[in-house]
Length: 272
Image (cartoon, rainbow, N blue to C red):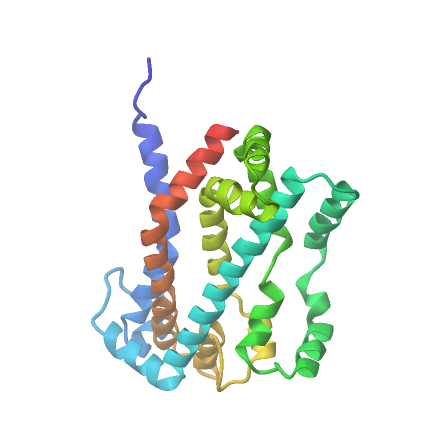
C-alpha cells in the first residue's frame, strides 16, 4: 500500500523552498528600503515602501528597456536555435548509423571540458571580422548550438523513439527529415521544453561574454545592471531593485512553463 509523505518530507520540502526563495526575497527586501537603511547592514525583515521609487530610479539610470529587449531577443532566439539544432543532432546520434558516430559524440561531449574563457579572444576577433562586434548577433552566434544540448537530446531520444516506429515510417515512404519531424520531434517535446527553458535562463543570466562583445549603449540586462554599481559608493537599494526587476521575466517564464517542465522530468524519471 502506498503511504502519503510524512511530516518530515513536507518539512524538508518547505525548508528547500524557503531556502531557494530567500535570495529573491532578500533582493526585494533591500530594494524596498532607502539607500541609508540598506547601507547600515541587516535591514528590517519586512519590506519597506520604496521599491517602486527605487525601481524607477534604476530604469532612469540605465537603458533598462533597451537592455531588457536585447536580453529577450538574444535569449529567445538562442533557446529556439539550441532546441532545433540539438534535437536534430541528438536524433542523428541516437537513431542513425554512420561511420565515426561514437568518436564524434565523444568529441562533442569533450568540448564541454574546454573553458569558455579560452575562446574569448579568437571569438571577438571573428565577430570583428564579420562586422558584428557590438551587435546582438555577436552574443547570439556562439550559443546557437551547445554540446550539452546535443548530448541531452541524444540521451533522451535513445529510449523515447522506438526503432520499430522509425522503420514503420520509412516503409510508409517517409523521407529522413519527415521521420524526424513527425516521429522524433513529438516524442522529444518534453525534453525540448526543459532544454529551451534552461538555455533561456543560462543566456539571460550570462554576463561575461555580453560584457566583452557589447558596448555600454547597447547592453543586455545583466550588463546594464552592472552599470548601477559604478563609483566608490554602491547604492544597494538601487542595484537590488534593478536585479529584482530583471528576475521577474524568469519567474513568469517558470510559472507559464511549469507544467511542461514537471511533465518532462516525470517522463524522464519513468523512462529511467
